[in-house]
Image 1 (cartoon, rainbow, N blue to C red):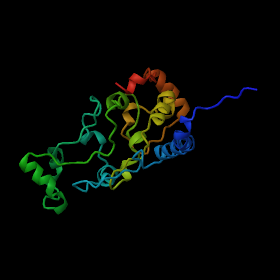
Image 2: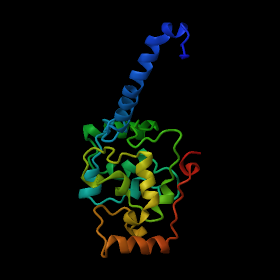
Image 3: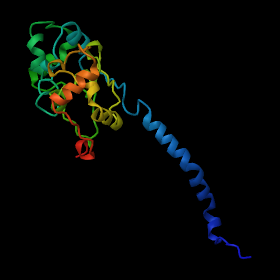
Image 4: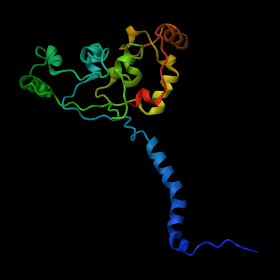
Amino acid sequence: MNRFIFPKWLDQIRPVLLLVLLGAPAYLITIGYYGMWPTTRTQGYMPEQPVPYSHALHVGELGMDCRYCHNTVEKSSHASIPPTSTCMNCHSMIRTEAPTLLPVRESYASGEAVEWIKVHDLSDFVYFNHSAHVTRGIGCETCHGRVDKMEEVWQEAPIRMGWCLDCHRNPEKHLRPVEHVTTMGYQPAEDQSVLGARLKEEYNINPNTDCSTCHR
């Protein structure tokens, strides 16, 4: 009876083969677990900003519309960081000597922008167009959460591919009338499934799920 005999050189790499066979599953499990952990996806990321701007005060208490500061959100792919002049529209008359607003006053005097830290920072290989969503009935709070209750803004949504695809495949549950896109805590007057289905047809919404939609 003939038996297959492994070449002797395999004995020299046997430890390596055992390491690969045993280590590969552990490696894949570790990478998968790490990749799904919220902090890996920067969910909850809340950087300390150079100026302690409170969305809870400005949006929540004062009722400022998101578009007052982020004034390109309806016509550009970027929401934009407001220029210092926008801040000074109010703060040239209100809290003009507040120590916390010193960086704003210095920025206005020098012309150098305040170095705000971006919270929702997508990877370079991901394309997202704010105007395409805002003008079609996707509310700000859908992605950014209840900023009207945030003293400091954090990243509430996971913003991973599966999360975005779920919305593209089932947009009805997120749609609202375009006049309410900046309304925080929006509650529809009718069942969301009925409203969403109606708005999807009215706004002609058929989100693409091809890779090239977001990866360009």
